[in-house]
Structures are given as C-alpha cells and as structure tokens.
Image (cartoon, rainbow, N blue to C red; front, side):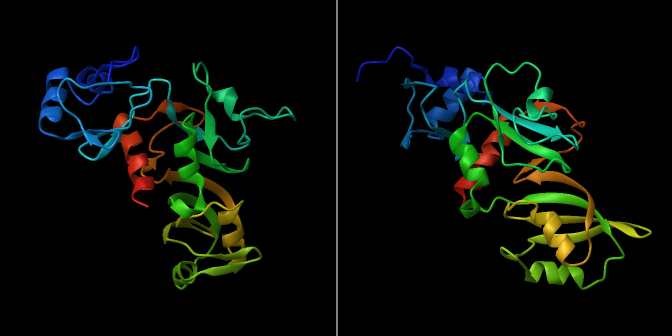
Length: 245
C-alpha cells in the first residue's frame, strides 16, 4: 500500500513517545517486541501516530500527541465539573494553560478531595468509569470512632444500601485519634457518595474523605489544587488494568 501523508517511521514514533532512542526502538522492532494494529511490526514500517494502536512488550504506547492524561489533587469545596453555572469553583479554575480540552474521569463530590484523572481520551475514560471494568479506587476517610474489630469483616462481606448491596475490596484502620479514626477503604464501584453512605450505614459517618488512588495511579505527594501529566508508564498501566478485565 502507498505511504500516507501522516505516516512516519515506527522507530521515530517510539522514540518520540519515550520508549527509548531510535536505535533502541529499532532493536525492539527487530526482536518482534512491537505490535502495531494487531500485527508484529517490521523494520522499515511506517504508521500514522494519530491512529495506530501500538504495543511494546505487551503494553500500550500512546503515540497520538493530541491525547492528554493528567492527575489532579482536587481541593475540598471544588465541584467536579469543568465549569459551574452557579459560579462555584470548578476543575477548570485549576488547570492553567492546557492546549487540548480535557474532561474529568468520574467525579468526587464537592466535600471530598483527592485524586481525579483528566483526559480527552473518551474510550479510556469510559472503561475507567464503567462498572463492568471494576477499576479499584482507594480512599482515606476520617470517621467517627472507635472502630470495632469486626467492622472490616462486615464491610468485606457486604452491606445492604437502599440502592443495592456494596462490598469493600479492602479495609484497614490507619490511625485512631480519640473519638475519630482514619481508615483506608478500597471499592471497585463508583455510585454517588458510595463511601459516605456505606460508612454512615455501619455507624461511622465520614467527616473528611480523600481519594488516594484510581487503579494503578496514586495521588502521592501532588499538592492540593495542582495537576501533573501522567508518565508514559502510568498511561500504559491504565490501559493494562482495563484490558486485563
């Protein structure tokens, strides 16, 4: 087939995506470690970086420079929308200059804080939020204490809410502070206010809630109100977690 105007040599595309130098990328291609659109690539291949699905050593490499993947530490009081018709602080107030228009992946209620993912990759965003993919989300919650020893077993076994049962995937007590406690809870679903409703149901209402991870992406030391671009390995890990399911 004749080469298309937007096609470039594969090793150049891989190098630009941070896989390695052009020589290292050529070596990966020669050893059959690169797959493009379901076919093992060969030296000399040219592809369109905006449309090709490229895997290196089994992991997705995003080569479309128009796609943006970001993490944000959403402050408390900020609504999970790009712009708010009531004039409240919204996500776009914290983005600064981002050339492409991005959207939040899922939500955090205004009283909650912590990790939000932002992207213009609609297909990945859908997979990260759709219940069928069961992407794990971890929260640090300050709740009313003390915490009985049996609470973890109860949450892992499942609790019935008005809109159906919910089961924690992991639970642990992080710290106790007099009449309050810090607990870490991991869930694979994202119903509205699910953590707050769950803890309220078992008698330990939440006074502060911070989301600390979404799948393999962690909040880490990202300061409140700041954003950062995800690294290539982090983006690959997001694709891996949804493709594994």
